[in-house]
Image (cartoon, rainbow, N blue to C red; front, top):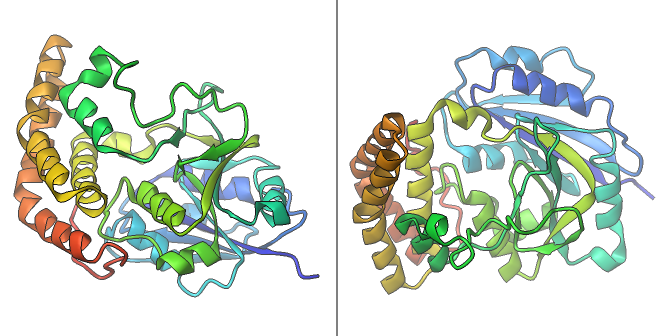
Length: 332
């Protein structure tokens, strides 16, 4: 019987030496029970020479240079295009594999009793050796309202975050969503869903994919028996204002795609008029002018991009099950 085949897709954007460390970690992994068909690095217009670190390794490596920052979802689709593997692992460049990070998860997915599991994540270990709280519940309006008003800070037990922070991540279980830093999927699921939705430039594209998979009958599973390394924040720590802008932008788009229209309008108004005040007050009481400045910059980017965001929102409302590829990407 032929072994199941695996492709690993890594989206790179100015990740520096992290990309090299990520690729080096793949070389010695235990490949018992599967064949590593391809390792694909998709570069989103990096200018830091990080691609130089992708050369000279004993890997079935393919490098795709997009020439611009097309966004995470678009890069994932570009890396997956033409794949004939049974499984696809989307791996962040700020992550790294351990020896057993893949053999056991793939063996688990190959078991007939697990045929309904379409997406799998593993324990993610940070720089301090601690387990990341990487699983989440599907994003709902109450989570967004708690976040934009600051109630999740004032009364976290009554207004919990959608991340499963109370789950210690030491046991395996079915969850709504696993973090996209280590996102192992059956290629069959990707084909059914039409790939990643490229209207999400970055953030919440993994939540959207997991939610659409669940609607198609596929489960997400957190596999706690093995782990991988993940540096919290990664490259996004370099661009905090842009990170907030894209987070708000994706949240608006997610609401338009998955929530009732009346709820969506309320959340949009709250995002534009309530949340900036909450964030600035929080920054003032925290004596953090830098955070305040980043908030102002992020909201300036959001207001400037709002006409395009709303045009995307229209396509999300009326074409929710398509990936809307080839739309103009927003710039960082």
